[in-house]
Length: 441
Image (cartoon, rainbow, N blue to C red; front, side, top):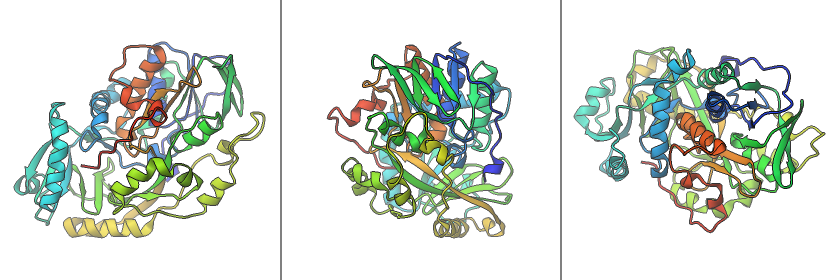
């Protein structure tokens, strides 16, 4: 699968100094690098593996407002506005198209759940709407299922994960950013408690600000700095098909989700499986994640694998002149759950018989970085002045990536933030705030 991810050529020589160093080359890190460089900020992005090597290339490719936690809605509105002009901004293709997305409902109960979410959307003037079964049949004439209705957002869209973050990274370089791949950041240097630089495997860079956009690796990096970030990993399994003359809008139905790809095939996933990896952090953060377990217990399928022992044996701290865990494992590349994918395709074919002729050409999995309230952290870390974190996007990161990058650029530069950053503050996990969960629409 990694062979399909667009390559980004690394810069060669580390600069001695930069204003900002970004750790992580996914959709968040590359978007941040672009927007900082466009503001004439000296920025270096360091990626331990390759650009978009992990979840930023392994996700569904949805860019959706629909079904978002209400706290995320203002940011995804801004992010969709950025996506719509991204191809022109970069002068190259990210695959973004406005196609609409449907959440299909087979029961009155499912429709009522969508209606409850719609109350949040109306205050933001989204074009999300409940449609009846006849309208679903017009939008998805290939389906043989008679749906009760759907939640439909015509302005939602899609992009191509294999090419989007690499295209943004190349745009960031054209704007003046330095991009380094196979360049792990081992740790942060401090003077008088403030960030003063980073130590990478290729040398040091003096800087006054560091942004950690490390996805599933972020909690480990924070722990090495004595910063507690409650975050776990969820396994997400995905497959793609050969080209099919099928529906243009993306859809999520009972036991399946799909998106038409630029190559004419489809990205397909189960959609109703939450597969947390059981690792030592599962116990360390158990109390914070207990509300999630209680809310989603019907769909949770915990998985015990070799990751438990790998993480048990992973050091929590390391000398900065020695090889770090980020160099020992450059890219998380877990095996997909074939049973979930088989079930997803069976479910899809029952509702859309045209997929019976589609062949599966590839399958893969990735780790989603999840917070206890399923809302990201986009924030300064008060304990270390000059240190910022953008992580925990909980499966929502690809679509919200440009908006998150813009918001973090505002925070780093002291600009007026594009949206209120309070819901994304790091301190909400330690200041006594109640963890609030909003279930999926």
